[in-house]
Amino acid sequence: MAPTDTSLLFLLSCFLNPSGSFQVTPVTNYTTAEWNPQPLPVDYLATSYTPSWVPNMKKKLVNYNRNLRPGFGGPPLLVRMSLDVVSIDHISAVDLDFTICILLRQYWKDERLAFTGTNESISLDGRLVEYLWVPDTFFPNSKFSFLHNVTMANRLLRLWPDGSIVYGQRVTVIAECNMDLRKYPLDKQNCSLHLESYGYTTEDMIYKWLKGDESVRGLQNLQVAQFTVKNHQTKEMIATYETGAYPHVAFSFRLTREVAYIFLQMYVPSTLLVMISWVSFWINKDSPPARVSLGITTVLAQTTFVTSARASLPKISYIKAVDVYLLMCFFFVFAALGEYAVVSFESTRRKRKAAKREKEIQNQREREIAQRAAFVDQIFQVHPDGKLPELQMPSPEPERQSWSTKEEGSSSGISEETKARRMAKIREKVARIQRVSLHDIQDVDNIDRYSRLIFPSTFMFCVVLYWTIYLLKM
Image 1 (cartoon, rainbow, N blue to C red):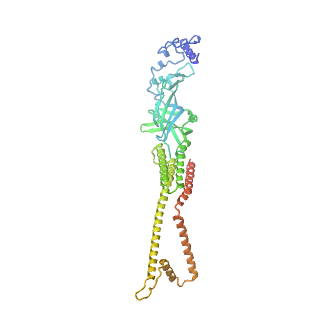
Image 2 (tube, helix red, strand yellow):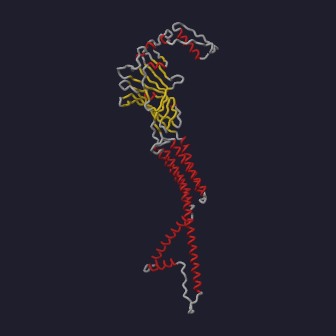
């Protein structure tokens, strides 16, 4: 026979034979059709079926006024609180709230319900609360809350002989939590749940925690997604409004965000995209489709990461830590695409410049050929008087000759040693200019070679600086 069935038979025997002796006869192998107990009378609490020490609640409630608090007209009623945290289901950084399920218990003393005959407490049906005075406690920072009622309303009511009462409820609350997300996802948040009397001021009622910080239990064993629950703290305050001062208690707990999920979802893909964008530095500059498609793809992918990160967070004005990292990655990806734009532009410009220079050289050669042809014609040309014409050789470098003449005219009166030093300095400057111009102009691929070193080293420096700054702030 099941233990539950034995307990039912024992209770029935107590009610049916309260004064005499009784024996429990086990019933075995019964079916639903065979076991058909008769319903108890509706007023069984006020009949002889009730043990003598059980208070007659029906009589006590005849003159009971549930609209007046216990000790009305006297000192304020002391109501103590304690609770067990069942679960913290959801902590939303978008809505700035959290969902918590608690077992709330309130303790007070109502001498109108005192009884004698025993020192033990009795548990009453939770539906009896509808006929008793209970504190009007509510959650001021609640967005939505409800009382669990499956299979019946989850309420506990226990009464002691001196009139002390404990009233327990299972409540789920969606409460607001003002989060500071500047360090997200390396942030730590303090969330709190507040309890307050809605209609009774401190002249009528006072709220206290039952055992201080030990009044809140269950936080140490919670498993919360993306968070670790740290220490908690209880507070007792007074809330002041236009209508008066009201008793107020609260407890706060500290949440430390777990970085692993967000690190794998945002940081790792963004870093890999930046590294993929560096592949374009090894692709030939004369392959525009490959480099442009790679650059645009990485930029669009990084934009998607930035958008998804902002969608999972509230629209706040300040910049968060994850925004800094994603924007830094976006800058490097965009810079890699811009680097190819610089390479392509510079390569095209230098090709045009080389073509223009080649055209000028060709024109110069054509002019020299024409001058030489004119000179040959002049050699074989004879004047009518029979004399040969005076020959004048064309100077292939008229500018250099004029420069030499000018230099010789301007250097008159200067020693040979001074002229030698000046010429050495001029030759050194010309050689330096030629080295730089040849180094930059003749090899555009140096931009890609430098980028292969500059981009990774700069990015690594920024990453180390980023983590150093935000980890030290923690």
